[in-house]
Image (cartoon, rainbow, N blue to C red):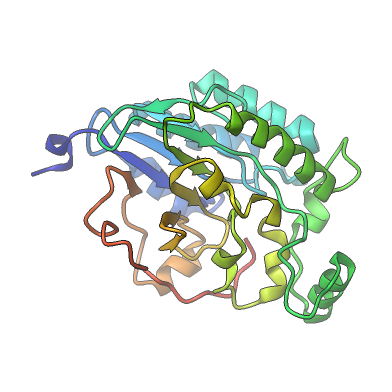
Length: 300
C-alpha cells in the first residue's frame, strides 16, 4: 500500500538550515505521500528572513497544512539579513510572514488533526530557554555560563539572539512559558495534544549531548511536566540535531531534525522523508526507545 492509499498523515521535520545549498535542495524536493498530509516544522528553517519565506512558502505549496514554530536561528539578527529587527519584533514579523503564506504559528488558534490517529489538538509552541538545564556541578546560571566559556562551547545566541524588549533571554522565556501555559490550559480537556516546540521540553532529551554545558541553551525546567499536564499523544522537537524517538512517562518524544550537511553525511547520506507522527507507525508502537543516534559535535 502506498502512503497515498494509506490516507493522510501528520508529519514532522525541523532544523532544515536552508542556508546550506544541499539542504535547500532537500526542502525543494519534499513532497507529501497523500494530498491530505500536514507538516510540522519545528524551527531552525534558516537565519535570513528571505530564506525562511522561501522554504515555508515552498512547503506550504505542497502540503495540505504547514505548522511552524521558531527556532533560535530564526530569531538571530544576522548582519547579512536585510531585516534587522530584533527580539520580539523579529518574531512578530515572522508570524505575519507565515500568516501571509497560510502557515500556522504559535500565535494562531490551535488546529485539530482529524485524520488517522485523531482527533488531536496540534499545539505549536514558542518557549525559549532560561539556562536551567545546567551541567553537573553548576548550581547557578552564572556558574553554568562560566563552565561553557571555559570549555569554549558557547551558543551563538549570546551574540545574535536579542531579547528586546525583555531585559534577558530568560525573562523572555518566562513570559512565553506563562503565555503558553495559559493557552494550553484552555484546550479541550477531553482531547489529546501533539506539542511542537523547537527546544526540548524535558532535560532528559539533552542527555546525549557530547558537551553537557550546551544544554543550558536547550530548554527550561518549567516545561518538565507539560507532556503529562496537557495530555500529549506525542511531543515533537528539534534543536539537538540528534534525530531519535524516546519515551517519557509513556509519552513519545520525537526529535525530527535534519541538521547540517556535515552531520547527515556522517549518518550515511541525506535525511529521509519527514517523520510520521500520526497515525503512530509500527516503528514506534512498541513503546521502546528507537533510532538512537550518537551526539555529534555541533552548535545548534
